Image (cartoon, rainbow, N blue to C red):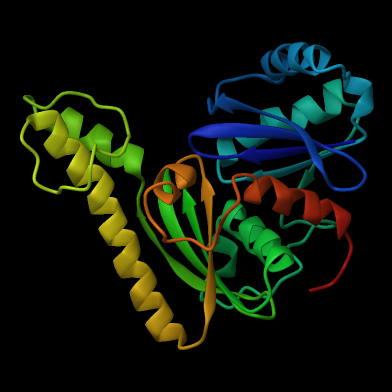
Length: 261
């Protein structure tokens, strides 16, 4: 099986992918650039055994990383404990395989590139991918699969943390929709919930409206990231929610390895 690793700013996500490209298990761990290969191995070894697998089941490792300082230890994990050299997304033989039609292709985050790859496999035509992570990103993928640009906004959790850390009188609250649909809160916590939740909904609605107007053609909206289902449950913003979009893109990188763009 393939071990797909999505090395993000907040979490490192691991997935076991079978030969048919199906994700059979998935796990996540908080990103820590000081975490060693040995620590990763102890944690993964226990999880693999709990699910009836072992390290010997893994024959290849592919990593998509946006945290360069954490990459070395993940490469060492693959080499030392899985007996294989990790393949790195964007480098031979797992190049992106799509056109990156932006001014600085090398600066594009690996997660956004693999999201584009997975989105192209899921939907025909023009697509917008919204990813709810450390940042909230909006990416435009053309009908031919080319990455055509996007935008980056502050993530929901970062906004809450900033509010809590900068305002002495405001409490730390969970990310959840406020009860009802009123946007006039009667207490501090309710007002914060409204501001964060419906404020983000309004931002997403506005960004999607502007992007769709600029694209000028029918477009599908795909959402991914841990908070996507939370927004989908109370709005009709997305055509589909794909929590594993990034991991699926990494699996496709491996399946298509060696293909030219």
